[in-house]
Length: 403
Image 1 (cartoon, rainbow, N blue to C red):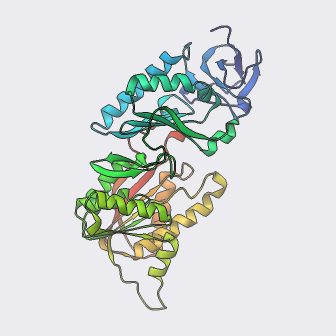
Image 2 (cartoon, rainbow, N blue to C red; image 1 turned 30 degrees about the vertical axis):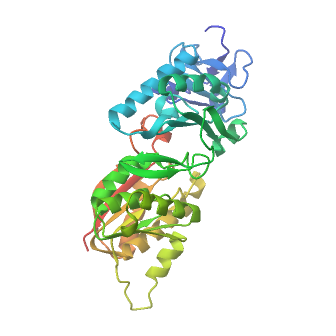
Image 3 (cartoon, one colour; image 1 turned 90 degrees about the horizontal axis):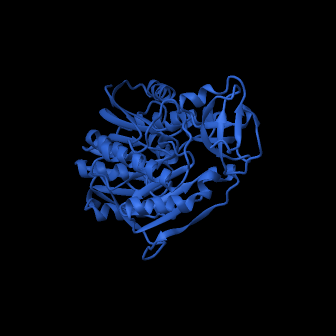
């Protein structure tokens, strides 16, 4: 291990690493004791030469080192088998009975730059660092030994690869699929969902909402429900199964709406679930428009808001907050007194306190008073490590309109 290139940190830059954060930025580095190739394993020491751990180096990225372990370990196939098994144990413990879930969540499982999602007997991996990309063959071998999957595919069309100097790549890495472009059927909480593993958002489904689908359905499974930004119908189908009289789901993607309708049919929920292709902002605006001295008549017993991220960086947070306020203001006008609002934000740059503040500002403008009845976070297959703030991004609330 002493033969490894050594990355020496500047004074005061070791604390984050000692606390457990895996990212070492270029600006934190004092010098390298010898040249290191991109993707190479390096050891990291503080400015007094005290050993801090090992990680993957990449000169092309702002994150020059992604830490893997505070110990002197060999990063071989056995290392990946141990880490993946440890991650799997967390899922078995906290999501017992689940057959589709995230197996490895990068920094949350101390494997920065590496994600694996499990859809029944097929695995989808993403490698967003050079170090992980170079070790993809041993990762695939470890996954085959642990899961014996029907197939392992890569879905490496994510923007973060560009920051590492990596090209896009998608395809089957191991095993076989009857038709690589054919949809796969996955189960979440006993409901069937059609998944296109080579297209759509994330790796096919929003697995981070799996527990929230069930929890929100317990609150909204009655009366008339509006599901905005519905994607493949996750919240809509769960609310429909829970007993809602009718769920109307809206998404701007015509393809997603078509899949959601097929999912409703596959689960016997077509009669109480309808789907519409529309821009949610425009749809809400049209239904809350009123002339002076007119009042909007509330129509829904529950409204669910689960939009995509409105911001990718801190600079655009003010614009994002205006967008969040707009949809909440209009949604609250459509909610009956006693109705429920379940709402989510998936931007890391908008924290829970900021998100709640914008909801309350919208409620003030709508002249509604809210009672908070639930707080939501990401499913436990997307673990949160508090010392790594980037691992916590999804937050949500449920409110009842009390007047």
